Image (spheres, rainbow, N blue to C red):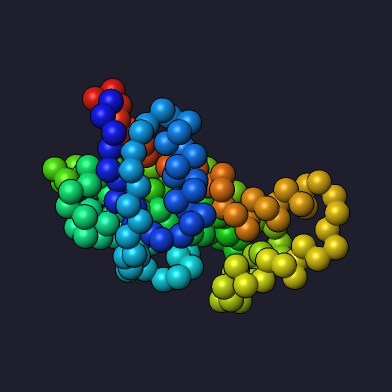
Length: 175
């Protein structure tokens, strides 16, 4: 496979780092071109459709701003109401690829039901990222420390959506 040029619709060092890790894991050689683009959705999307649309908007914006790229990638983390209890939220990520021929494909991470503290923050309309430290002050047990890092970094969700989307894109003849 030739070395690709990927326009990614973010300047987030965290998301770019996760993309690099996933590309390395999948054996894909690429030059990554971070591009600042608007998601076109709220800062904290609260539905799957809004989150997916944010990833689409970012991918389209990235490829439109760098037409020399092989494709654009958009990554959007969001929340949605848990199917078994509409008063609870799950966290997840959508990723979309749009290539310079107009082909588009999206993939999603697994969903994780957030702990009660996070539910209250989201239900009150506050931005979750601003309230993570309060919950984990003094947390010493391994499960809470893991949850703290998982929700703060969003790594398993972002990497899961990236893997799902990249594999579907490169193996699309099999789907």
